Image (cartoon, protein in one colour):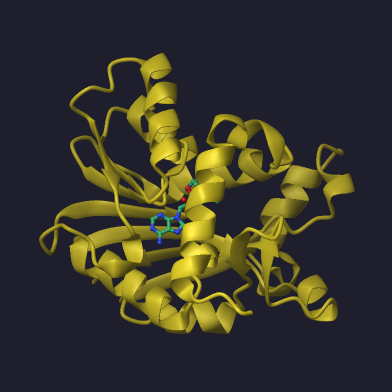
Length: 243
Ligand SMILES: C[S@@+](CC[C@H](N)C(=O)[O-])C[C@H]1O[C@@H](n2cnc3c(N)ncnc32)[C@H](O)[C@@H]1O
């Protein structure tokens, strides 16, 4: 029997709760956060005093970087245990009180903020887990609504890369429990069309064996600048400005 959107989301919530304590230790090869995270922080380019919405904040990989820089942040997720873990990690950073608000909510059902509330929205490794096209549209139109004019959205998601096309992969479930969708660059560009300025590119363009080898960082950065990264990157990155 096929699962509907609500069942898919419930399954993810339960699995995210279960995996929250170990999330950052288990599934990510080190080279993913090493390349993705500094890039995301750089593209967000948060200025002192700005407000940031971390959509699908999880256990706080991004939240933690932002609070380290002294920003005001709302960390939103629909997994309660992930948010608990996020707060626990932040305690280690210290001095986060009053800077981070945690919000348990489904980001695809409308965001509980007035229009133009945030200077920055981060949507990192989250939209691929939204099961339907309609919900993806809703998520991004809400991200657009809550951004101030001139505000920036930074989004990363799975790419339907050349290898994925060869393997005929488009949708699936991690461990049979967490739904994911692979985006083509054209599809993601269409979803982001409301934003006046958009820059899209692929990252993690090399095979895992090449990371850590001499010149791999340079090669990775060069490919990121070329349209071929739409096909070779495992992850798509979008930086969009609400003009
Ligand atoms: C792969 S994790 C990424 C977490 C974090 N952004 C990072 O990059 O480390 C995806 C997160 O998005 C959350 N998520 C997925 N769909 C969501 C939704 N519709 N509303 C709120 N959170 C959602 C999941 O619970 C999970 O914590």
